[in-house]
Length: 231
Image 1 (cartoon, rainbow, N blue to C red):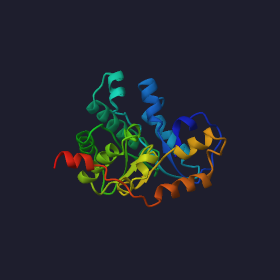
Image 2: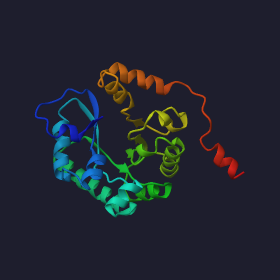
Image 3: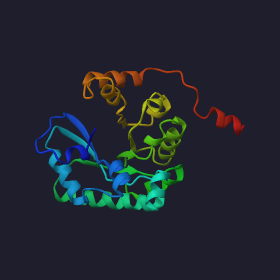
């Protein structure tokens, strides 16, 4: 997973192998209230970088729905969702004109279950679409919240292949969460390496992190206390 923010000013090609492009939405919207690239410009960036390695997907430019972001921008979740869908359709249209076959990954946004269901309805997603789930990285300290969001999406559209953005160790270690994800990205292993004089781009370190996340665990049911309260 490479960010469009990191690629924007590069002149030369890269050799990443199989990879995904992140739109860099969070840092742009949170810091600037908007995107550096227009939909047309972002489509051109996707098309340009698709020549490097095997670009399997590029995430759309989405607008987050974390309460702090909504308050600062003076918007509500529905407005952010509408902006996200509009931008997705524009980027997709430009990619079609460029004859690009890179999968533009739609991203579902929201904060609670009803938000995500509403956003699914706003899109016209084909069967089995590889779809990102946004605004979950800020909830990693409470895996139960991540699981509720994913469960609400899968209950409504079980066919969607879900990608979890920025899923951290606490959530990834939960088999119940992993089984609902088709894919996920995490900087946990790379961040640890940077802070401890390691190689933040080591394939071996990435594989070790993956293996650790996939180890069988004995987990306490996430909703045990909630279930007791309603018994």
